[in-house]
Length: 394
Picture 1 (cartoon, rainbow, N blue to C red):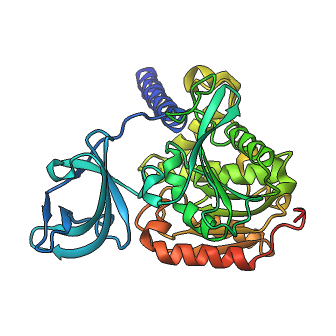
Picture 2 (cartoon, rainbow, N blue to C red; picture 1 turned 135 degrees about the horizontal axis):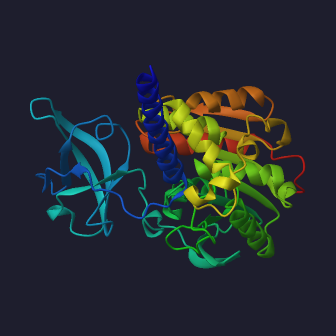
């Protein structure tokens, strides 16, 4: 009996240790910045059609056969090509051929592998709009940003749109919203955040899921006000949407914020991270243990955070009544990274303020990519017809 009890205790100890290690690994994966991504997309063939149009042949999958516009990064991130419409699919070989709209950098015709992405614009140049490089004073230095003045002389330079990218991304990911803002005559500011590769690092070098990053965007709001802005619109992508919600609820400048456009928003980080874990076949209870580590001062030796995460403060399902600004939520039901059900519930709790717009998409934050013209038209229509927050002085 004692031997059996000892064996059970040993087994429980090993299982407990394994669960602890798995939870610790999960917690660190959430907050430790990633600098490299594997080029896991095989590029079968790049060739020119009879009319000299550049084409690319890829393995067929849900993402590579999805309608719309996308991109491929290659040559260790130094090369970038914009990928357009599907031209043909071949069931026998399991391949798809798509049109290459442009090559922004690198020798795509010799590329053998790359990364499929929604970042159609790697820099401002392909947008064809006037812009300048500016710097925003933030906590640990200067954060680079792109400023787009209205391209039309009739534009209202006192209305600014600030564009905020997602977790682990770069400001290039937020460029997709700039053309709509420009057509409406707004000045656009596309910002970087602490721990971006081109922005100052936080003191601990860790992501804080918007808990601290929103102060960098608040600094961008102050910059815009100093440049003559009288009202601010926020375009937020994933984490950027969570940051926009923090600003609308907590910023000293919240009375200047007129409307929010939130694409694939992270509304509640706890639910989102547990759902992510489950989709990766990690038990929910292990993920919840990881969240406890992230929220504990005593577990900072594991997470590397200089302060624990406050998940209740990052939950805008619970904080919905703190918001008073019109919100457009854009999401797709197939998003496996940020659950669509949370966006639907958020809008249901804010029926007088929030509107839900859905697009079919194969990936997280690629609603625009699946239908660029439809996305632009729908967002422009909403912005033209939904009055700004009553707190904004026009």
